[in-house]
Amino acid sequence: MKRIINVLLYGSLIALLLYVYNLDFLIFRDLRINYLWLSISILLLFTGFVFSAISWKVALNLHNVKAGFKEAIYSQGIVGFTKYIPGRVWTILGRAAILKNEDRELKRLSFISFKEQLVYLCLGFFISIYPVIRTEKIQEYAWIIFILTTLLFLLLFSSSLQRLFEKVWNRIFKKPISLPKISIKEFAQLSGVIIIWWFFWIAGFYFLLISVTGFVPFYYAFAFPLSVVLGLISIIFPGGIGVREGAITLFLISNGISADIAITISILARIWFLAGEFFAFFLALYFRKKT
Image 1 (cartoon, rainbow, N blue to C red):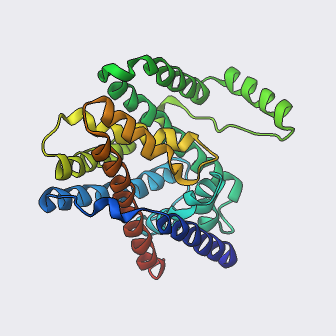
Image 2 (image 1 turned 90 degrees about the horizontal axis):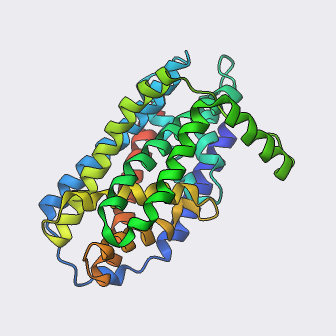
């Protein structure tokens, strides 16, 4: 288990460093930032990361896996950078592998992790419908978001659709897949925490926006959840690199922000979120000694 954790740790850090190395920091040379708003945005971002660990703890406890807050913080934060490794599997399996012991089966923990991520993604898509409908220049894409949201909800709750999806998947990829089943009660209990988590990140992104642009309508902040969910489903792009930045840029330009500022904000948003991931990572290292 220690070897798995070390592979996750060093592999994700190498992938992250490669990404940071390729960033163009010169774009921030002439940028004027309101550091009060920026500080508030970072505080809200960090709070959102704490609630992401609480969400993981709630998911475990709902399935009678007793995990404390420190364990949730550690297992959630230590694998945060695995999203920069191509593929999504380590993001889901990583925290499950860390919590595995004689009383906790890896398969069961992985299913719980996958289930929580599906609810998170489902809510993210639901939230993202609003900014697309609200923005006149990209309203025609609202139906795509709506269909994806509907399909995700159906996959979560419809056993017949789950069986059909599993059958089609097995026939195409020749590998079995089993989707986790979730009840309405489980969804409601998980959603309560995940919505709080999303709220802090959306509010944090809004303060990041106004730290650069000055005051803008609050719905501009919904560019962030839209970019996150699009990044999550673009499996071939580790960490949603390029996809998230492109989504934020397109959304802001469609709402009247100049192209230069929109591109700058999209890259700044990535660095801002990296700061949150570093916070979660070092918090995990701190709690590693406590677990």
